[in-house]
Length: 246
Length: 69
Image (cartoon, rainbow over the protein chains, first blue to last red):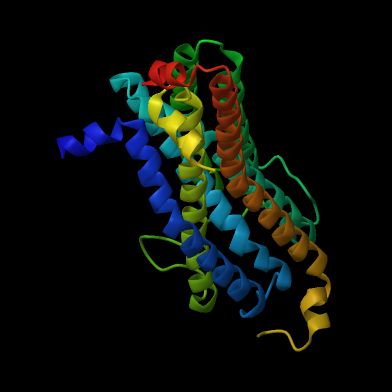
């Protein structure tokens, strides 16, 4: 167990393991994504009230779910890097921010496109949508804050604090559809009790959510690999890597 | 397949433009996100390789490796 933590602190080991993981996780995730999306897009019946526009659910919900989960990863990595000064945690935190921002952006834009035929408007200042917009700004804030510092250790600490403070927003996002009942519909998938979504629609949605988790993990691992290289350019193993590749 | 024809699939009873735009944009953003780290990694390695080659031309190859280890 301890040797695992010891290895986790070793950049060359992490770089190599992340590369091995990516080699099988990326094709599996893309296959799951393709299957889930085509299934939902072409092989399910339309919603009896919303018609075909509901098919956006197969990208909107997974993107939103994983954007939120990504924030946990970022805040947790931030906490670990603050408390134990683990370099890997700082790298993970920085690597998560752009992926989370992209997923939040997808959730917002697809929601907006879905809103037009369903609610008759592209945008409302509804609690769920507004708190998701704040999530996007938190992700972008971490990216901008990191770039703003020349001292990367100070940048890491500032970003960790920002991401930890931002976790206040997470329960607000979850509860927003119950606390403020507005245009946005409440969750249809429940861990406790019966889901209010038909199984024929639930399965492709679940597959798509799993696929989005996979894509998120792949992008995260890839970003971490690139970040490790960028920070270790002065070391022997990176120089041998650069000399060896081509 | 739910749709009877290719045209029905594209039109989706009038919702086609919204649905296809949402899917197209999502796939675009996801592919950018997935491609970005590999591009950055290859660029870093390429730059470093160039630097190493310049150092090697000036006969300081040993020094370059030694400084890194």
